[in-house]
Image (cartoon, rainbow, N blue to C red; front, side, top):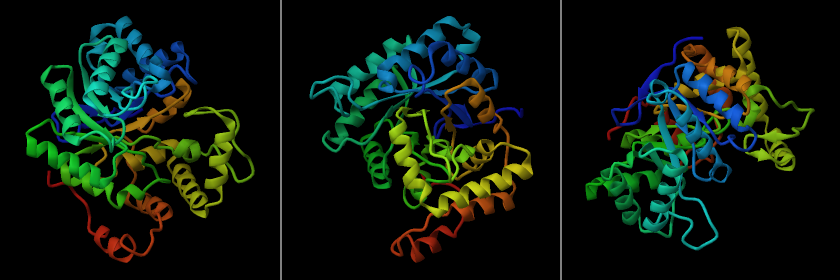
Length: 348
């Protein structure tokens, strides 16, 4: 396996591995022993960015990580760049959700307690909150940074205009500016390249893509003739898996992408997952790709993408097969003309 590469976390000075370990499976499809084995394998491979959230397995994911941190030597755990999130419901009350000062403060304190740490490196708001004044959220995040409980702040699942509004407001008020955005992004989900990616490049936010393998589609897991069964990364729900399969399998683009990935993988002597991850890791603005595995075997294969870079011809073939077809305006003719210009960096 090639050495793990590192990049700066958005516009910050913190370096992180180009592959991150997502822990949504911890406490759900992956038990504690398996979760600790994944963490051990990840750091042994040179990875350091570990991503969780307070709602993953209702907090159990953070607890599992906390016990792992407490049981490993400092020379191992000191290398970990720890990221978590807050925003979604943590209780049944009306104030147990959202990005208000009340909920975010309680959410962060709960995360710190479960993780067994005094500070998290990256605290991300899990989604936009249209009800809470943006200034309230940003001042709360800034206070967390000033109190030493958070080192950097980030966003997750925000649209392009939301990214721009957050960054502009934070800068105008002299508050901590987010350094990352965590979006869904893969060869099968590229629509964010129309607005979200340019917004992040302009503002200097690094992308931390989740679901980089399209829920297993980009591993060759599914075929035209066989529906999915059993657990998925999002939980044990075969019916939901079948429903998602039925929708995506009817799209010819899905099979075009899979065929293109299979072709590159075969020629490379790599797995389909490694090719899909390599393509994504080298997209403009991407800092680190979040891996979500149920087993150490799956994680080991994903980590094989470390240091793998596709050549221009391979990238062009994958780009062509996966190019989403937008409506004519504004992303069709005019949009394509704009995107034909290479994106090399932001103005933030």
